[in-house]
Length: 75
Image 1 (cartoon, rainbow, N blue to C red):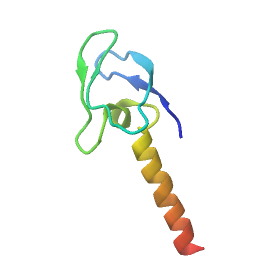
Image 2 (tube, rainbow, N blue to C red; image 1 turned 30 degrees about the horizontal axis):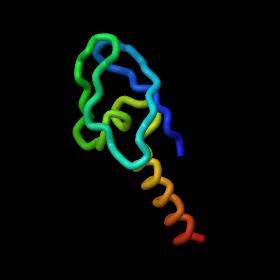
Image 3 (spheres, one colour; image 1 turned 120 degrees about the horizontal axis):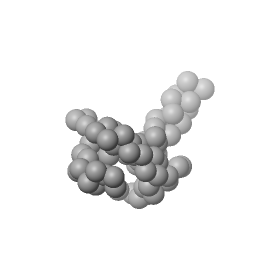
Image 4 (cartoon, rainbow, N blue to C red; image 1 turned 60 degrees about the horizontal axis):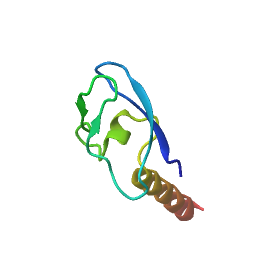
């Protein structure tokens, strides 16, 4: 599981590497360059899933579990 993600703010284009918490979603993020508040897009659980280079750990774990389940049911 990856715990670093680069958040790119769509307004000013600033990119910042951030540590993601293992068991929580981050709903708000202040851009370090322009100070604007970033919120997740509709349907996403957090800013990492919307604007990060890597989705948050809970989503990574869900995806891994779904992949394991698919392998088990077909194999």
